[in-house]
Picture 1: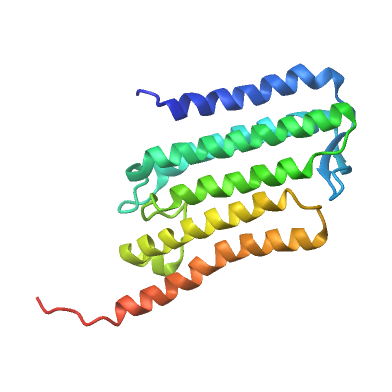
Picture 2 (picture 1 turned 30 degrees about the horizontal axis):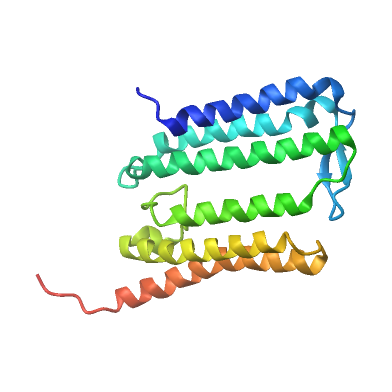
Length: 221
């Protein structure tokens, strides 16, 4: 089977994660930081091996999982219809994980605080990219806004994901802009609110769209 650019790029990203971890292993501390506080300093740790190879192992698991899901999708909800979009989203998530891995390993090696502004900017960009592709997803059980109403009606799915795409882009831009602010609990609450709104509003919207469509008079055959 011919591999697409996204397939090859995804494999290279995962490989880069393992190569980077192995290359830096000798100069990294034991234990390894596994969580960073709002000030960018580590506040939780893992044994060195798991701390160093955590990100590439997660990337490998994500790659395998996202490769399996299209194969087990039920009939009528096939994911092949948006296979190209699925691969781009997979590559985007893997690239995000690799980027964060680079930041974490550099902070662990140097002892400098993790740059929360850079991480926030990357999260915002991730949301913007996802938002731009949400509208290209067709009905399935594994990706998108999967409510009883979107799964029951193709038009509800389409309308909901058009709205969700716009909300994800807006939330991503807001999150990225937050990276220029001082990282305080208020900023964190604002970002959480943007993420919550982008996720919750489409769910509620799908219900009302479904109800509206179901109340339309049906033409007789």
